[in-house]
Image 1: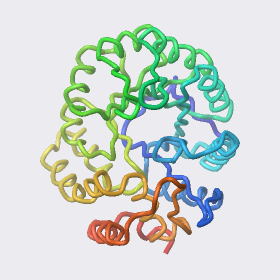
Image 2: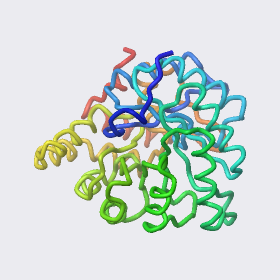
Image 3: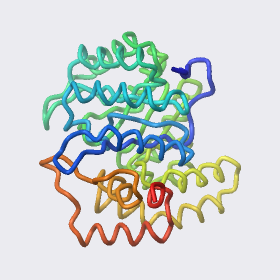
Image 4: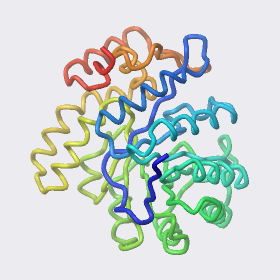
Length: 312
């Protein structure tokens, strides 16, 4: 396998979308479909692929399934683009073991949420700091911290800057909290020279504001990354008007994905485009309502993402 070694490479930037996990109609892993998903994403021109994240339905996978998918994804991508492996778990020991496995299999970076469980079980700031530090020590890979409302953990700007200073492998931050642009701006200012990659997420729904605030990348779904990428390229080149126009064209679809569909949007479009055979999600998640599905595909047809036609 050709491995990517980000420690000696340029910092990660650009579009690093989340790979969905295909299931059969009966809820089993569709491994051939997973390979097709990865090939489609490479053809979308992504700058990296993140696996086993929330939009990969990681919370509905067994440990054995995680291992199967990690091995399949890393071997099938085979260095064509960097692969980021999500290793989140409340247990530091389990998160560290996941991180070691990912590093051994050729991961380029790890993504990690702070330790939480359910609605109320959280580590304190000391425990959270130690959690990230121990996972970094276990894997010796760059870490992207996912700062999302799902965890219920308040990761303050001073805490994140201190973490980046004292645990140098914590070099990337995915900010998808309300007011993301303000937090990104404050992080870029306070963490100058420490943070290699301020990213946003949440399907890139606040991308223009976040780029203006200093974000250098985004982690959307796999629905339309090749249409998001020009927004970043124009913005990076100082062509803000062109960036805004490119973003305005795709924003209705992004908004519909974010507000109406969630992780099911990319799967539905990929099924329609012949990438995967089924857009099934695992219970207790439910499939899209037929009317929502129709609305999604109508909006997708207007901008014609590669996922809608890749396998046709």
